[in-house]
Picture (cartoon, rainbow, N blue to C red):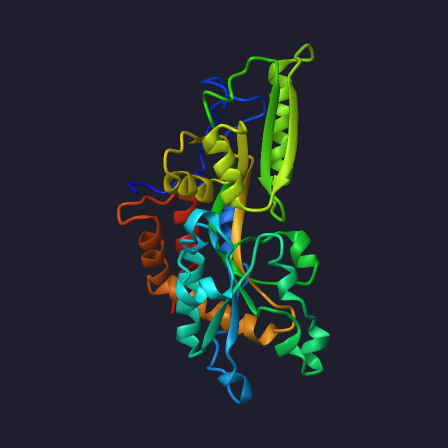
Length: 333
């Protein structure tokens, strides 16, 4: 890979059906970009001391995905089932997995990998602060930490989930087949997204833009629906079964490259900026504080940059927005 496809501050839209921009696509305001980059430093944390007592010996349960390269993935043949047996035989890889592992090594913690999906991941963090106060934190859910590309947003924060500082910035876009997504103004156009993710809204926004492009006289039937895995969605658009598959661009581009004979292309249109963070069980506020401190150290000593290049390529270039986030998160002594 010669360059990362992370969202750029000045990304301009290119039409999925040709070279004309889709209606509503726009250049991101510079001030807003800087403000979002500054959010990376919002969750300031005390540098943790190693855990003590019984908890220091407890193995942490890390939720990982098999279908989200280059952030959290396992090479499962033909997108097959990802279960405990697969994880026991294949070490999970990816930017988010590596970041979690390095942070926990810094804390001297042991861990096990637990398979989750986009649909089940947040439910796997079940447990409350009341559980922790009652000493039930260890059994409040099936995982303690999510080491996969989870977007941090206000809805999830208000839902009680704990998040680290922002550790990556991606953007919602789509894959398309130029030979399938031709604007004929007739026939059926299928748009898919991964259930359990923030891509549903952008998928419906893409539908609205296409309806506007075709006009009110168009006979095209545009349908939006979800799929259960990236393997399914990417496979459908690569084969030409559907016209568009919406998701985080870094994941879509990586999966298209990994799919033999795939003719789908990643669009340059961005619907949103997706800030990733490490999600922690609400039953483990103590673990969240420790993890935040360890991650800041990884930013400051250059480990996170090394993780980026290990997963995106030695010569990969960060977007200006991601570069700004990296510099802000690298705290001084």
